[in-house]
Amino acid sequence: MKVKHIRSALGSLLVLSAGGPSHLAAGGPGKDAPNILFVAIDDFNDWGPTQLDGAPFEVDTPNFDALADRGILFTNAHCNAPSCNPSRTSIMSGLHPASTGVYANGHDWLANERFDDILLLPEYFQQHGYTTLGGGKIYHANQGNDFNRKGLLSPRGWEDFFPSFEEQLPVPSMPDIKPDRGEGNFNWGGTGKPLEDMGDHKVVNWAIDQLETPQDKPLFLAVGIYRPHMPWFVPDEFYDHYEDVKITPATNPVGWKKNIPESLANRWDRHKDYVGKPGPSRGYAACVTYADFELGRLLRGLEASPLAENTIVVIWSDHGWHLGEKDHFSKFTLWEESTRVPLLILKPGANKQEVDTAVSLLDVYPTLLALAGLPANADNDGQNLLPIIKAETDLNRAILTSDNEHYHAVRDGRYRYLKSDKAEALFDHFNDPREFHNIADQPGSTAIIKRLAKTLPSLPAPSMPQRSKPEKL
Image 1: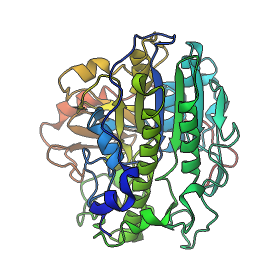
Image 2 (image 1 turned 120 degrees about the vertical axis):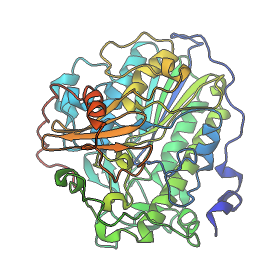
Image 3 (image 1 turned 180 degrees about the vertical axis):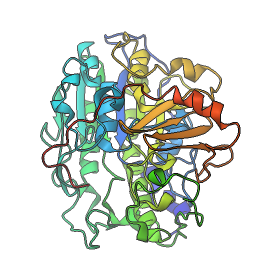
């Protein structure tokens, strides 16, 4: 079955209608304040949306594409840390990892006093008159495994959370199947189980119920979709879609590391023996298409609800994902594949727009406050994106992604600058979009590096201690 036929294969269930919200209500809390649908999709790189076109072969995401055709798509959006916990902590708190020391999955932000006096995103909306509900993976999980996962979840700001404040996904988060590849959760295939058994399906069902429930206050609803996080198991119909597709795995030029400092080029090479093999790409693509299917169900639920005409939707991912690029299968790097994320805002009355200026997930918190007509939060490290949406592309706006206090990436509209305590590298996306040719030592790069280096933190917060039993990644 060819991927291009997926729409007919799964029927109209996949595709959103073209209609939607038509006006933006007056800002501020009250019965006319806009509702917020806040959708997180885990490990979702730029393979999905056709407007980003990061995949080396066709990956079908009809629902995201339909949304991008009538929303604001940020084509150069990046996370602030290339792993789940620090990225999600950052977007939910409005604080950069370099401000808090939360750089890794093993950093327990709940034990960090830096957050004691910070209003988390749902707290801010709650204190300004909103009903705040959440379900699925919003924060990072720190217990269990990928088949039975519990959450590092703060009850702060939530009136209710599905399935509970102790569990981020229905247990088990996916049908009862076991890895068989000897690679832990680096595994893929069909579940052989009904769609209804998937944890994401249950979360979306719950979210649709909330959208249909009459509200006496504006609603802030956060929904976390877990796929395409590993292991890449999905209902058979999604995995089978890619059976006859010619999978073109990513490859790397021979000698690509030769002009990149060793400490930067060799930081990660997880599962490098799979480079050039189609299996991981097929598993990931199937999960992306499944996540898109659940996104479509959620948005159709919104369109059929009483909230359809007055809801702002934001869709984001916590970080990207390598599928063989740079000899790596995972996140955790400061290359484009790991930091670049889909970011889409759909608001009543808006037309299709692509914003090419560099932005980060840190900008989402202040932007949502502005869209809702709420006062700015002075503690936010990010910037309200509304002026950027209205302006011409700014190639010089630079954003910061941090791996730890010693290693950072700066990305603007043209360049990526990597800086560690030991080395630096510069890449020109106009001429080298895959970032294989370091130009840091070339004539003319000095001024560029000097400008980008101004975005680096002068005194980054030191890393928090790891939890005593850090999660097995």
